[in-house]
Image (cartoon, rainbow, N blue to C red; front, top):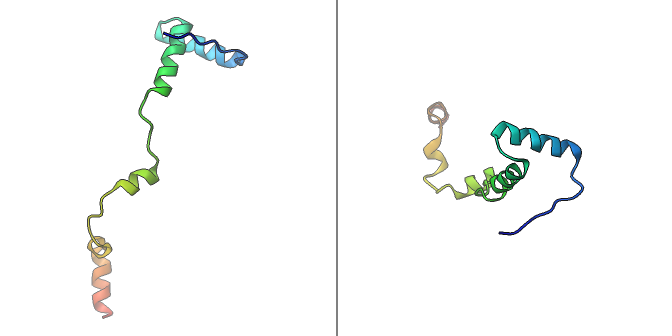
Length: 77
C-alpha cells in the first residue's frame, strides 16, 4: 500500500476531519482514508442530461398528449 502526505491543509479542514473521525470512532488518519475512498471509489453520478439521453424512445409525442389536449384538437378540427 502507498503512503500519501498532504501539506498546507487549512486548519478548518483539519478540525472538521478530526471532528468527523471522533464521531465515527476512528483515528484522523483512518477517517482521511475513509473520506478519500468514499469520494474517489464510488461510481460517478450521471448528470440529468446523461440520464435523459439514455432513456429509450418509447413512442411518439402524440402518444403522451394529455386527454384534454386531444379533446380540444378534435373540437377545432
